[in-house]
Length: 145
Image 1 (cartoon, helix red, strand yellow):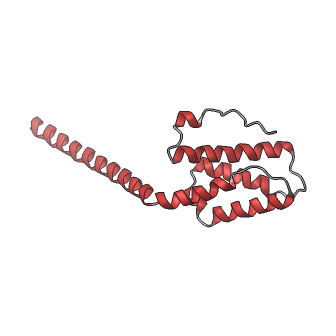
Image 2 (cartoon, helix red, strand yellow):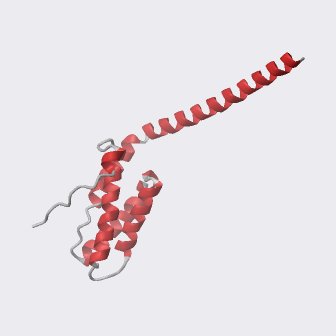
Image 3 (spheres, helix red, strand yellow):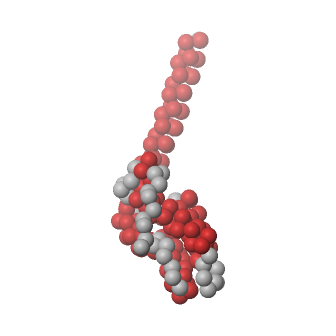
């Protein structure tokens, strides 16, 4: 009787482990297939976002224009493709750009640059240009004349 009980429990355990394994594999495969299916769409949105992530703003008109373009990009589907952390950086940049001001303070320009640079770096990681280690490495500042 003891052997029968052990065999039944072992078989039941095997069925449960098999079911859980199949579920996790199917879930992973579905996510992988979804990511592959949207690759071309994501690339198009990322190319558009790359241009929007140029942090230079020299006038109130440019600030307002960048704010409107970024908001439109996000609302037309681009926001759907951003990771949670990238969304936080994107919305942080939008918040800075949203403020109606004649000149943006140096601190706000620095914060804006940090947000937009982080997004660009993350895009490079996402498309395979950078490894995660490279994405965490600080590049030297470009020198402006």
